[in-house]
Image (cartoon, rainbow, N blue to C red; front, side):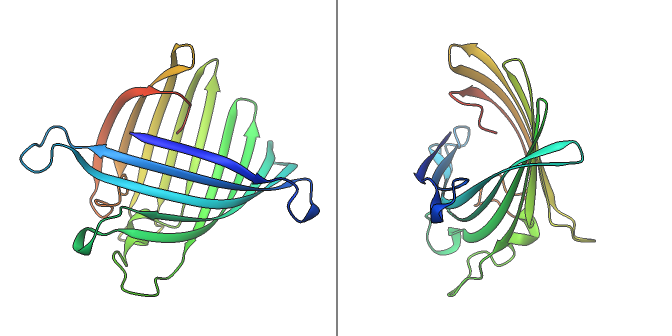
Length: 206
């Protein structure tokens, strides 16, 4: 289950018409319904608040239109204690491009070093230093591909996520999602997983 929202906090930051300030928040919960001997309720809940500046652009590169650049800071944690605690803070830049029905979002990031004890010092070895998201829309259907990689050899690790969103009724949409790799949830960030999801959504979140 995922709930996300973003709110525009200010338009025309520093007197610049193309620069806006946004706040966002995402909460994602993983229901472990099949394993009542360990925990039949939720296995893990991840919290992800962020703040970012959006600079609207309009330029062309390799046939794509550059639509925006985001500069932001994001915190992600699972709210657990002791050995199950996971958290990290990042600053990132995100570049958005469009070409016909195809959108590309490229987001490199830098992890902010922990001041105190680090719950997961090797998290970048598994979740990498950035991600690429491609979204293709055809009619009311949307298809997306997310890629992450740590760009290391021989310990190369990453993740791929495929989504298909399709109309059901009114604003209600169905979706099919496939994930393979590391970092689907923070508690298992250093374990490779495969998952297949079926569900409904109110938006085309990828």
